[in-house]
Image (cartoon, rainbow, N blue to C red; front, side, top):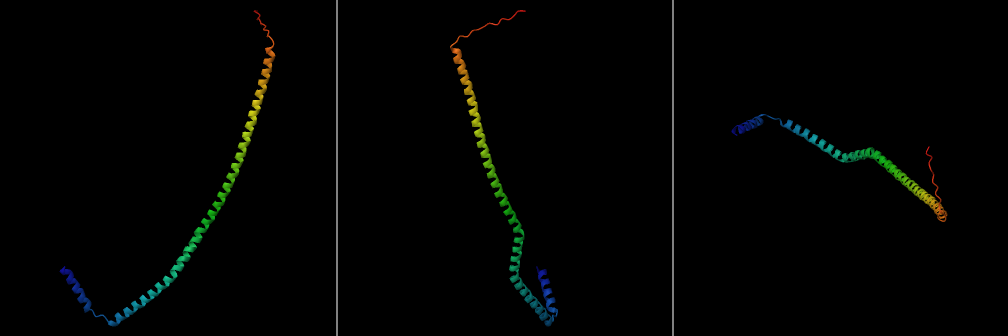
Length: 145
């Protein structure tokens, strides 16, 4: 610890022993003051300009990036509406086809039922005509050749 204090005292003696010209010190302070004033002025200018510039840059960036996205969204919305309309039309066509097929099936069932009624009526007439008579059975013999 004493070494550190000894070095510190030595440096203080060197600093106090070296003769610094007061005019040089004043000139250095004047330069530093002028540079600080210039820096303060530049800071004030940046403070007023920066929000405007940043705002403009953000708006321009949004315009450049958001406009194409907005166009694509509008196009997607239009395509979606067109798809919904076409799906509605397809649904109506399928429903109409379904109803037509159901009608065709009903007609086919009526035709088949009518055909079987006709067969049933013919069989009933044949049974009636056979009921009043006796049937003669003939035997067919085979030639034994």
